[in-house]
Image 1: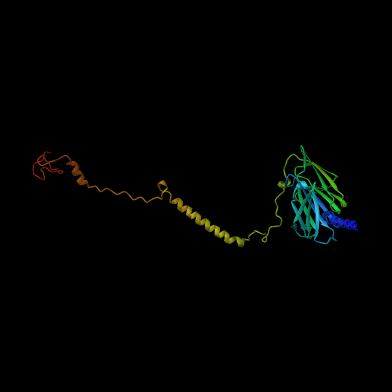
Image 2 (image 1 turned 135 degrees about the vertical axis):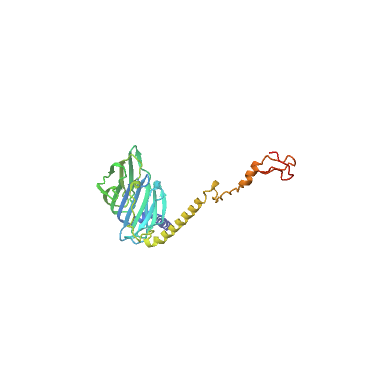
Length: 310
């Protein structure tokens, strides 16, 4: 009796400690899943994108666990999408075990998206090769693969062969294929090979375009009536600056960089021609008696009356 109770206890304990992913595989199912593989898009690595939709019978929210290679580290994005709406980031937990790491998160909506960069692109000269593996975590009713051709790449081949070739609005080519139904636990492998002589990234050659038409309602755009007060204010500031600069420059025309001073006209030296001539003529005539200096035209000393010796 004790042995049976112990056996029942350990059985229940084992069921409770099973990995969440193993238990979830029994109930979760994907209606569709598209796996995008973009080599050397905006990093020198393989950008892997899972775009999946849960079946309509799944009650939401539900816990989901999807494995990605442990070597890639944390995923670039884990998100859920409302039907016809935008993506919302989802909080996740990463649990690594061996070569794989499981990303656990709660799906509030049926559409989910996971992105990660895998740096394991093998290179041999100009030839590059990548091995992709879907580990078979959940059953998928319709699996689709889409491989983007890198800019500058030639001789792109896939195994198994993806026969559908399409182009997007930017002129990028895609190799696609419908894989169909995949059961839980069934892995899918794809090998991509191409030749490329440069390390150019595809994103560097994409044209820059607005995400929506520009209109008066576009965020950050000002109408003419909103811009007019700003324009008048800027014009006034420019006029003031020009006036200050003109005043400063014209005031520096003086010597040594100092403001120029108004020069006064030189004073005229008033000459007395008659006196000047008299002094010049009698400059050396003195009275020999008293020594008094004589003026021009004097014949006798004005002081002592003595006749001058001219």
